[in-house]
Amino acid sequence: MDTLPTLTTARLTLDRMTDADIPRLAELCGDERIAATTLSIPHPYSHDDARAWIACHAEIISAGTGYPFAMRLAVTGDLIGGVGIHPNPTHRRAEIGYWVGVPYWGKGYCTEAAREVIRFGFEDLGLNAITCGYFVGNTASERVMHKLGITPEGVRRQHYVRFEQFVDLAVGTLLRSEWQSR
Image (cartoon, rainbow, N blue to C red; front, top):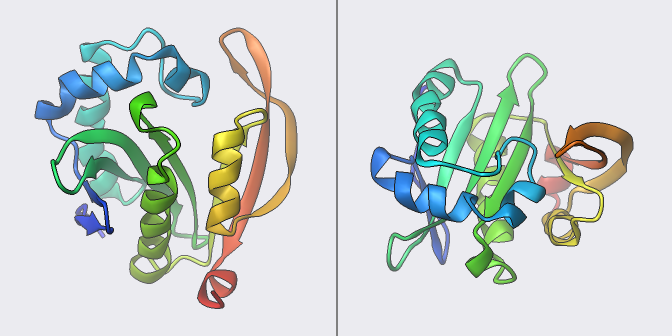
């Protein structure tokens, strides 16, 4: 698949980010609490960071190596976060990642968006397994993985360096057969 479809849920629209999203993306990602829970969002986060991230989307979508979705409120179209899936077609697996702006924490948006992207991965991309990880201590992301039915597999100790500190990464996987049995 070399295009990014628009996905919808009860409360969200998941679609492509555009340059019009740069100010809002920089505002949401500029909160240090977002950067602290993700590997690739820098802090501080500038308009140039947002522009560069959006600019790389066309290439990864075209190559089939990533499907980065803007997470928007369906009613207003407001950007509230992002969710993406990065497939490895050779092994029919992918990794999913997500973040949501601080004003929208605790409302179930990540779970709702990730659930739809998982459906997209299994149904549209033909995947067999979807993995996810979170920094140990990020209880919100841990809860999202649990709600999605992702089976915890372990902790990769001091797996990454984030803000000059080693961080542990908890990982898990959801298999197609497990997803289908729900």
